Amino acid sequence: MKVKYKRLMDNFYGDAPFMGCLLVVPSCKNDCEGCQNQHLKREDTFVSEVKDVGLAIEENPFWEGIILGGLEPLDDKRNFKALMKVVEVSKVKSLCIYTSYEIEDINMDLIPSNIKNLYIKTGKYDRTLSSKHIQYNGWILDLASNNQNFYYFDRKKSVL
Ligand code: SF4
Image 1 (tube, helix red, strand yellow):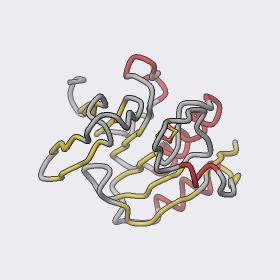
Image 2 (spheres, rainbow, N blue to C red):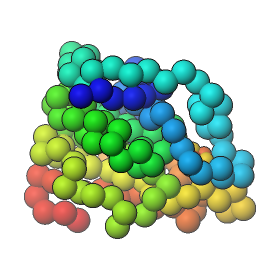
Image 3 (spheres, rainbow, N blue to C red):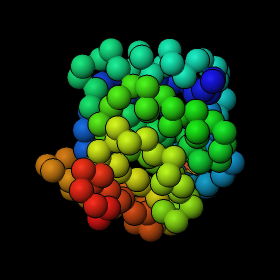
Image 4 (cartoon, rainbow, N blue to C red):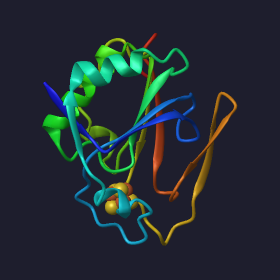
């Protein structure tokens, strides 16, 4: 199985309450006014074996998890499944998904069982609204507009 992505960024922190790697996904169908990530749409897209990307992530002992973002992970359903396979192969404990979709649009059955801490940022960017700061375990995160939400699912116990 192959997975598409634009970047795999090292030791990334600030967008999730853990340090990990940021996998920039390949596309976004939205065209939000004021989007800071439009330049990513023009970058080259890489296509790799799921196993190779997952094992490369597993090799880094400092990465607690994977952050999926940059563009929109849920637009391409087939690639989202491949991304979830990368998460499974990497054996990371934490996953953070940045999406413009709402929480009920996400198929939780696709999230691999190795993920014990699941964070999901939802909602479309609205440049007319102010940003929002949130805190998790001492980490301060910024959401681009205050209509967006940030969910935590503790999969060690029950869903919160
Ligand atoms: S959803 Fe995010 S990446 Fe896509 S256009 Fe809107 S702000 Fe940009």
